Image (cartoon, rainbow, N blue to C red; front, side):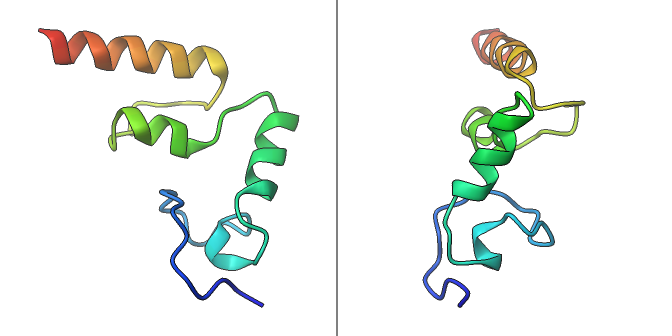
Length: 76
């Protein structure tokens, strides 16, 4: 059964089979996949900025760099 209520997920990739809109398991499958691959879910990046166009990967290092770069631009 697919989720009928809107889930808080900010992922815009509705074609992704792990998106909560496509199953009834919430965020668990996405988080499990990301942890297994040493990555961070895109929703964490979207907390910082909606513009993810410059990202090449979703690693912890990329997250830290993205945060610091975005924070630096906001302070200028």
